[in-house]
Image (cartoon, rainbow, N blue to C red; front, top):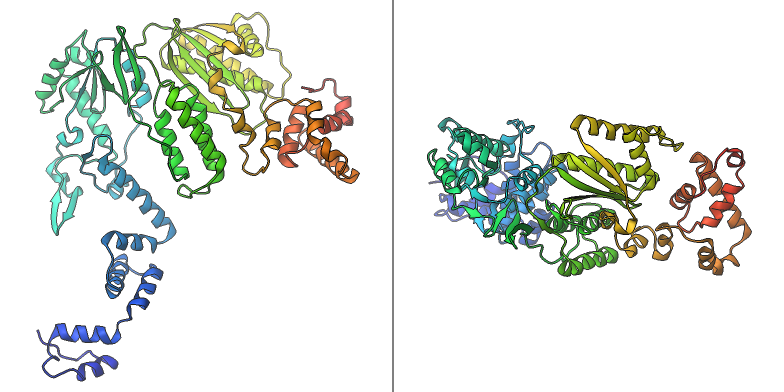
Length: 598
């Protein structure tokens, strides 16, 4: 191929004219000479490569080509580094979306537990045009409850290769194509990542089971996993039934001999099926970020039915990680978070609460409920004392009365029992007020008596309990138990050291510890006695004025709530005695018929 210098202008034509006559017609030699004359040096090319960003109106293809050109000038970079430079040069919104997508694909390509490689395609664009109807989608927690009530003689059957057994219509192949080494390939099976793939799998499995009524009643499916009650149909018959429709299954696994059911390891212990944790939690993350802490906490509790003390601890760690970081991947060296994680890891090694009885039968259950300033907890157990499921919900930073939190916990406990299809409930609480409210409402012995600020909310909660009892035909009894005997108490507590030093904005944990519980005036005087002699009267007057302003703005609450608002809005060092003096001197509170002193 010869070169005709029709479009070489300025310096380019001068360089070409100075070349040997034998080399002027060679395209390769002309290109090398022009590059050598006009290309930037390696240092300038590297600086330009690092600073290069997508320009307004520029095509992404042009941007990527220019990055490749600059990389060649300083020696080249691996493809992975080129991709990272390309993504870093995109606008912020696009860059974050691509990073999230690349992480998701990286996790999906290889299952770390099974070292199995699956064909995962980038379905993000296709998924934006496909609307999944998920109202009828299976929920793991709900399916787990059904499986645990499906009998004791159960086996698990797993479809082999799941989605890869589902063929797609040939007209749909163009929507699942990839380019490999310059060659276009079409995936003729359902790929991993399609948003409607789980619904397709569910529809196929349901259609196969509906061909045999006995099979349909004996098998409970969840995606490609089948729970078979062998008192009705043998697992081998289920395997043969699916083979008739071209679906190959793995050999059945009996629960009594040890099997994995929905992420739980189930085996017979003393003639009774019991479940335990099946996943390996692993050591705590070395680098603490919000993402790594949340991932580790997810492995701690996951979808396990019973976790005990681990639930509030994991939730507390996540809340702490949120407080000390501003983004998902921002590292933190927070010493408090590290100490809390180490405590959970060491206690988990010697006291893992994730285990229990697998099979649940009957419609009688005991519901333990409790609440504290930290969390609300619920434990559902059999009449014989075997825990079925528990739950924990951290409370927000609020001043809602503890009686309201106890009542909310009772409602949550009843809802959990209804989800298990229990109809005879023994509700046990350590709150005398909640016990009286619900007992009086069920028996009709007396009307609800309360003058709290949330009176109407309390009445609505009580009406909700009555409606649940009436509509579901529940036989509900309420029992008052001591706090020391409440099985849900551990779900509402974390180590006291965590509460004292949890606020990242407070430097001295001893000051933050004042919000843990009631502190006597004598203790506060001892804590602040050293400073009392040096604090000027003007400072005390200013603090009293500020407390009075907070007290009035909050609607003249009692000492406890005023103390909360004062420590939140003024200073954590505000003492109870200061607040008590302001409230006792308040003219509005003096004229009130009743005072909120507690």
